[in-house]
Length: 462
Length: 59
Image (cartoon, rainbow over all chains, first blue to last red):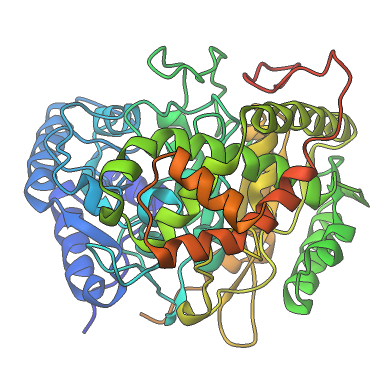
């Protein structure tokens, strides 16, 4: 019999606080779940059971001694293999970095370990967060726990698969064009790309400096708020970090949405080719929010062609800057899709890059103006439920670029959460986009929707 | 970009590509150029690039 899913952050926290669950027991349950499921799901690149065991013993001793590290004390987590953890390899799922031993911790590792959490391992990703689920990679690619023949989304694919399948209650991801939100959407969990600058990227291998974000993937919105409380804050080691006070993310989480104004970018569904199932699920989500007392009105976003062009011009150029030397000296250590996607950046001129950054500012101000009138926006995160792995595009410049790059272009926070199921049994997803540094308000709306709609209670058949 | 221009650019940038990769990337260059055309229209001088994000003046 397959061991049961491990509890989410809030549930585990309550159980540990009440003395009904010990970190050691939770660790055993987590390892059993991972050993049962991961051979088929391939979410983990490396499982760090010994390290977690040491952390569990320490947590148990501290709890026994009355040392309180907060609500995450004694709970497991995982890191996308772009995050450094001292003494472990950070491979980025690539042959290029197979022997890349981290000497220091990323800021996220420091904060989560400091909160008393237990690192269970490093999680699979698309190579350097831009590749595809190729066979020519050093580790297998993560599968979707709802159906292993389907895509788990990317690039934080292992993070999505691990949380959705109940192997972990929290996994860290990165998001340069949607890489936290898409795995969350495809696997039916919560993924938050915070405001640019809200979470430190120190110790995270970059893809595109001005577009990269760190963020959590969890099973529920409350879990997301707990994770954000531990992770958010200024870090002078990250040049993009914002020195802005961190609010209490739980304080207004359950305040409801009555009287809030929510814009629904409904016309974007047609512009972006969103399918009928996802469009209907978004319409239904808007109705749920309206029923809870929010005022929901249709709004128009900046054109997709413009924000895609600005975003991908910047990503192409910045990622080539990161990888140019290795691409010249050891190109065949990259999988073909990754290599070709990054090399395309060699054909973006300096003038084009600057023009893209100028357009980016214009688009960000347009969205800011929209958010003066609305507390949040509903924006489709994808065109429909997870495609089959065999249907995932491997071209250098994708025909079907993700819909999610807008929030990387503008820096606004955006959260994906489940909002339905497709006819073939795969999750549909709602994306909410909020004001700059407005994660608390965003999670308040997401929590109200989650509790009313109940889609977070659906579990994959694993 | 013509194929000759593309091959010259590859050589100038010292990118050691296989013939197969060259074909694949050349096949995407038209789409890249079409995408970039959307960002390169002239802008007023005061339109500064987005570099940092600050609350109230987000980029």
